[in-house]
Length: 555
Picture 1 (cartoon, helix red, strand yellow):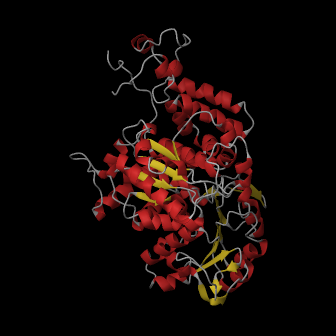
Picture 2 (picture 1 turned 30 degrees about the vertical axis):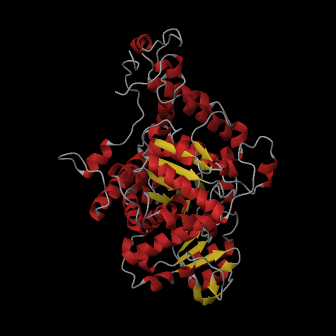
Picture 3 (picture 1 turned 90 degrees about the horizontal axis):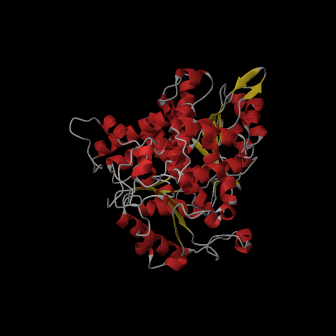
């Protein structure tokens, strides 16, 4: 067992070693802790219980989240065990929807550093700064520039709450040890006037860098972080739509990296669609003929469209052009139709040259009759009642997926979806919603959240040492996840497994990712002698429990 490089109060102040009241009498003597703690001894299970009792006394979700953050700052093992023991209760406090509030208030509630921050003032020094991160190994880093946080827009340096929250889920559900994670904030300015004038804002006070100034700094960071940790997985998170896809395209073949908003969201939605097809008794191959309306032409919307498009080709669709005609995509001007100029390279394949530009969602639904509608606009109310009623008039079971986060920005609520379809809709949402009673029947909408995919993807790719994350790896992730929904859950109207099963989902996704990496011959780490890939990935999963600390370094 590795031992801490400190003793006494230093150990108590290190969240990776601190056990609080769980230090045994023997450990307190060995580590010179005797007298520094109350005399009571508690097990980890007892600590979890008493923390939850205190947490449940607090009514406000933001205050609950701050309590959890403070726990992570002092005892990482206990924090992640709480996350595992009460997934349904705690995950929404650590991530969506509460993380939006956490980010908005991040500067005001800042207490201690939880990652690395780089600013324009650090140009030329990033490789040296990487050495300031004290951990010698890193499996997963989550990086944001704060330019498009959830549906809240440009939050600048306050966006650091996102990498911290994502990595908490990586640890608890994906089995990545907390000391092998790295949250990163690329604080390259903000255009948010409120934060620029807020005296308590903790970020770099300047307008967002653009063009070569921005991309040269990003280049320096990428070189610095992969020089320090050459085999880690880097996840891009919440970059604005104008940068997200170009950044991914630039680096995805050079480094082990992926964009969760584009690829993670796409894989998660694909898993939900495959689950919905299972629910109505249709095989996975039926996706090749599925008509899809995508409300939102940003990085997330187009990423989902690309994932479904790939799946259609995998399922036997004739060619890419035919598959593209299954889609209608909408931005603030309406349908991306005939004659639209200025589209990005990612949007061009989904432009409908046979339909008038700017058609409304309702007009298009009546003409094209999609069975699946996806809300990825980041704006409340962008899926209309008329559009949903038109879908229900054509399809016995319309698939309605309003996916924008946080809850306040969702395109429509599950209650509206069930009401406008007379209870026929199959509903999945980005944030968690309570069950809905309609017509004397109770419906439970599924949560279509990326946390079903990215922890397992990070686990599998990092454990096997994959060289890259190809699109086929995301497809395999989605297929693996879709098989985790039980027949009972499908019968209850759920297209995703219960979040209480999310650690098992992450393991299956991780195994499928690693197996695919070996098939493609892009894995650099091999299982042990006589060990299967499944056994290898399972063995590498971190589980939060206390381990004995035998002695101090130097004794």
